[in-house]
Length: 164
Image 1 (tube, rainbow, N blue to C red):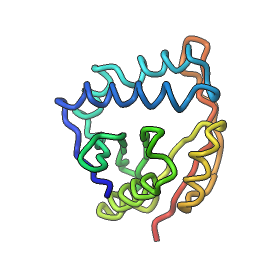
Image 2: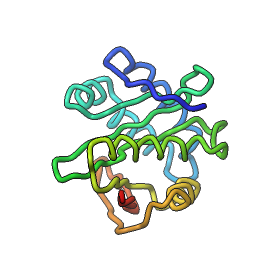
Image 3: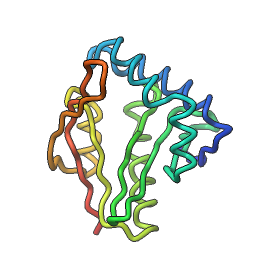
Image 4: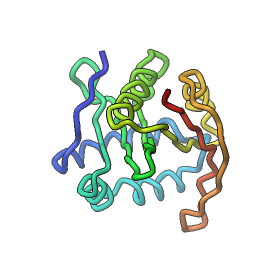
């Protein structure tokens, strides 16, 4: 059973540790190790996570059998949508339906707030994540290339799940 624990400022180091472990095992072959390190520094610094939690981004630790195995981060927008910023889980837990449970949880958060959709971006080379999102019912609605500095880009598909 997957459970979700709302993260606070005291969980920042845990989130950073999980991000490093997950990114360095899941992303090689999709993006370079140099880009992985750059993005970890950019998106998972103490300051970045602290500020996001302070600004109301919903960070939650995913726990399986009472052990932390990943995390999510969701932003609720004033336009009636939610953005799934992050959904990461240790590689050993892939393929067990836990990602689908996490997506159900995110959609449940959106429904509680009467939102109309959840959207996300996913790296175009992250085939396993793309398959998981599509299996859940997310639909590819666009693609985007964002310059993130230092000569790197995020080359992503945009997916949307419409809440009925």
